[in-house]
Image (cartoon, rainbow, N blue to C red; front, side):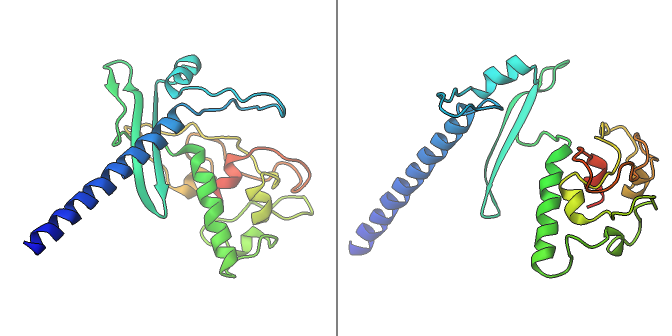
Length: 206
């Protein structure tokens, strides 16, 4: 009888904890869905929050996917809108999106991890580390470094990349760098550390 009561107590405790976790998760999802801020917030003025579906409609964004990772584990994922507006296929947690510029902070984090381990230096000529491809020689005195690549001040070309469809043949990284994909080749077109200029091409070298 005592064992039965102990088991019953554990089941009630587990059910209560699970219910609380589900409630907390639902609240977190709702907060994110309804807590979008404008790109510019003026100090002293009240913050105006937006709903994700309303913003998608206003900005004509057909589909969005959100995934929240905490401590290296997926906490939740959810899709919104349509993956294909022609046949009304909806976005779900398995819908594939092109990574795009979200790969930049991931690359930056990887560089900082290597820096922490003493494997790289932010202000050394990046060609010291590049093995299968080198930044083309240029006439400028300043060098291309990891710090300048990560801060878009390296003077490198190619603003952004249009991406590829699933039906396309994907070029290798070196082919993209050499202009053999769907963009021009990447080279140093302005003196490093002279101006800030967004360069997806520069970040692709990281």
